[in-house]
Length: 79
Image (cartoon, rainbow, N blue to C red; front, top):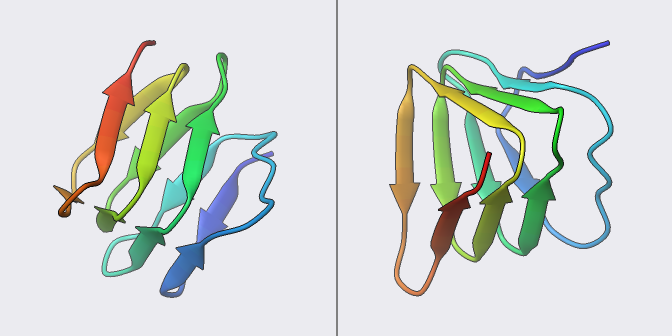
């Protein structure tokens, strides 16, 4: 089942992504550590995705919102 992020959220530390993730419209997801979206998982961003560290996408990303990579952050899409 999908995980829908409905309020502003910061990802840091040990977060394991095991199902599709959706960032709802009007919501900010901030990436403060290195995270990998595994193969077979879909990240849907309808809100704002801010990458301060590293986001590696081995699955799929669907972006209808805003995607921002700050400073020394990085976004790698392998899917």
